[in-house]
Image 1: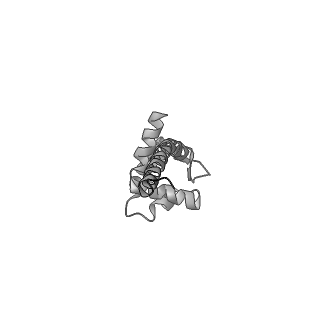
Image 2 (image 1 turned 120 degrees about the vertical axis):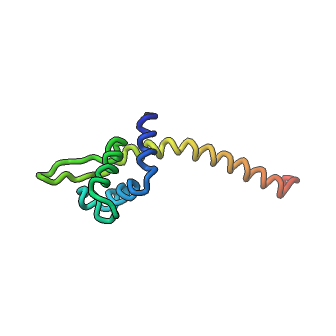
Image 3 (image 1 turned 30 degrees about the vertical axis):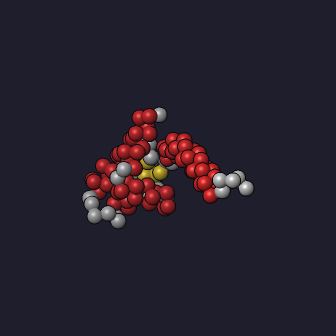
Amino acid sequence: MTERLDATFAALADPTRRAILARLARDGEATVTELAAPFAMSQPAVSKHLKVLERAGLVTRGRNGRRRPCRLDPRPLQEVTDWLAEYRRFWEERYQALDALLDELQDPEGG
């Protein structure tokens, strides 16, 4: 799981790849040509980004005749969410302890 998580974070580190994922999440499948349209870069450059996303398991490519549409696979994002949940619990516990301390400092008599 660590290797997959590393690949997911590496893929998400680039704003172009995040924009591609957002486009696929919002509009569904798209070809490389369609994905390249909003960017000031060549289709081969977008294809390189797609390969990174594919290696991370975030994008799959199908075949529909001559068309090779790309699709979002959200499972790696769920793994990231699960991993981050541990840290969310950590910070929630810290904030609860801070809240308790602030309450105590505001009312040291306890009532």
